[in-house]
Length: 365
Ligand SMILES: *Cc1c(COP(=O)(O)O)cnc(C)c1O
Image 1 (tube, helix red, strand yellow):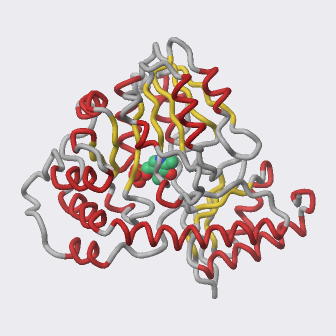
Image 2 (cartoon, rainbow, N blue to C red):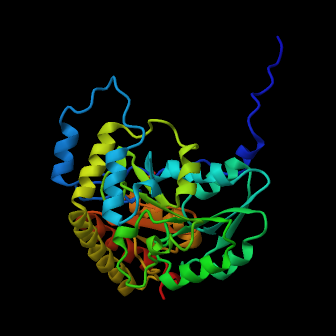
Image 3 (spheres, protein in one colour):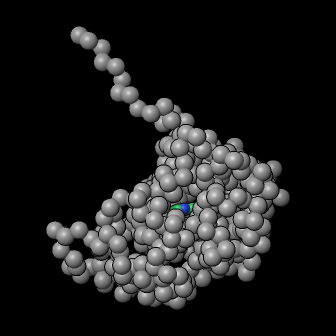
């Protein structure tokens, strides 16, 4: 028998881990399970959206509108930009892939904060780019000084994440403005605003205001978080026409189904309500973060729909303690991220966290 050679896959695949989704909660008798591991919205989508997606809509034999005209029109109206400056994709995840595709290859370098969204090392690693994962400051914010210094003549893409997943803080408008002033105008800067609707810090960077002055800025957004439509897989970018034209060549044709386009469009029709719900979750988050701090935890500024506990090498132990109480949290190695969920789930987390601090007093501040 001839021994078969292993299938030849790209060497770059060895340089980064696969994306690991948040786990489902363990089953524990007598306890309602809470999945606080994926930053999903725990409130239902708006009734008008639910109604629209339950009606038999576009014929399944037909392709969806590839140009997503109605949705892009609505995005343009809501945010005061030309629809030519928008693109709609299968979640912001597809955008991350496309942005990397149009900027990066084995000759280029990528700069991103770390810890941050797990897809940044994945997409840039797959492209074969040289990666500069710039450590966050101890308080969970981007080290923009170090990030600006990491930009070289070979940099193809810079990712910023505000609010930062998983640690929580936002970039301030002043920070973003001065960072953009330092980055050469030919380097694309992708500002990932997946959680922007939850940010209540008045100093939060307003990327949209900087687009005219910085054609190298692209904003990434999603319907998965504040709109509560993670299952519909719709994301969008706002950027200069030239960047959009590049992205259009890199995305999958007909990726966003008609049902998903409809759901997203209707959700944007009720944008004020979406923002009001995001505010409800933000208030819950603030209360939860304050309760953790009152127990003695060090919690970075939390501006998304999640809270970060910097547990270091105790992350595994915390994850297990939570799972024994039917709570799924997200263990990212350096810490644990807990999504804002129903109140009962958060109260149970507070019981776990209090007991954990009693067992590990060195964690308390
Ligand atoms: C959730 C998330 C995304 C993308 O989510 P999609 O569901 O693909 O739209 C992008 N960036 C960050 C930081 C996220 O947390």
